[in-house]
Length: 219
Image 1 (tube, rainbow, N blue to C red):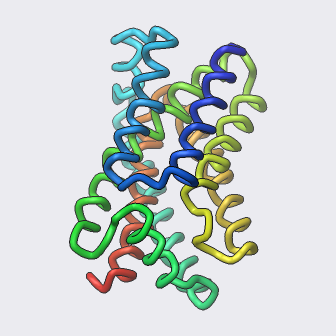
Image 2 (spheres, rainbow, N blue to C red; image 1 turned 90 degrees about the vertical axis):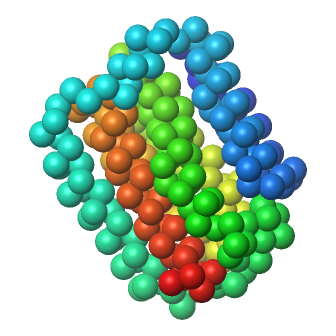
């Protein structure tokens, strides 16, 4: 299990370097993330096909309804939080960072938003919840698994959001990501898969991308 912790720390550190210093275009960065957060853990840990299919197998159809309600609540909550804090968030700064560093602009944002919502969220759910949380839960216990995976999930976003907000909003965002990670973990523990947390994560990303549509004057 120490091997898994070391691997996860190295992979997240490498991804932060990519986000913070290399600044490739968004699609190159996404390809690197697929390698680091999906292929490397599968190969190094020797995860079987049955294990991987088990992570995305729906085991409780009734949970879907509850997940949809939670996801919708998360969507509304993020939009309302943005509206409350909008005076402290400079969307022009974020737009400039996205355009200059990641080559994300009005012409390609819809494609990026679709990828973030449906594909990127699945990759992150596999790595932080399927590979880490569920993997650590049996061997390290609930407190360790919950805290470590949620904390690493929050730290990982430091490289992504660096320079987006003023320090107080940045810290608030990291705390929100940590709490979000705990919520995702709780959903996964109940179902022993990543299906429900993926759906909630997808709704959270849809909310953020809705704000992005406003930022790029698409909405």
